[in-house]
Image (cartoon, rainbow, N blue to C red; front, side, top):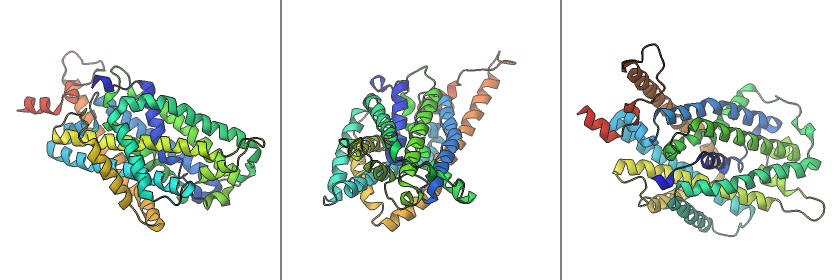
Length: 390
């Protein structure tokens, strides 16, 4: 696994591109008109304690992926059952990203092309990325993220002449209940979906604190999301943005630099596809690592990648068949995802903290001073724990 170790910069870029993957395609809070940016900001603020929770888990269980954490905390039977559920959730996340990208391409660019052909092309591209490994994806993302950030910032600068700052007024017109619900929706997708990185960041470079990387990534993500959301509202206006399927695409489409630079939506589309590609790959990688743990296959094995990619492609076709079904799934998703994003990780944190403090209190010579080392029982493999128990 040494060749798959992630550096801090690679982890940051992967995290940011994952959250941008589908988040910029379907802008959050458009139904709140000019208050949509408040819901986005609320989701970002609510994401802070969630990221703190994930970083604490990575600190309590260094070198362990999510499946190993579940087995350590809940035992072989319950931990294995929860791992299966997380694998299904990871595949659903990847399938939803694949379906979102294929819908976007078909609606905005090639409406006459059968959707399954685009899904197959995206699935084959994702298979190549998954088989290349997380480190290759991290190296690739280092070059892609600056381009994505440049396009977001550049379109904001070019669009200044088309912006009407009165579109933000009056503020706080939406009922508080709607603002809270909009923030909760923005939290669940995409920020809560970063729980899948618990299955990937076991490859984080040794002696590097994961907390700093994730905090930097969250700050970059917040800046890009707020810039994109404000750009869409200021250019399109509150009424138009609420009736637009892809606000980011529509707002950039009307921009021009002088009389010779137009069609900026092509750059935006390429960036969205590249970011969505990362989200699909991370979802499949997370499922692959979880199933490898259950089946006793080495985590570096690529045997599960091909079947999981085809399962993802098939699931993306089955998720919904009409826009009405898509709206229902989208409305129910925050509640469906809550146990995966908050419930189970919170229980893992409680178990981890209990074992950490119990181990620290039983160590000789530590009375009156804090033990800053991670206890051995949190870093042992499940086989070592079982043999020691027997």
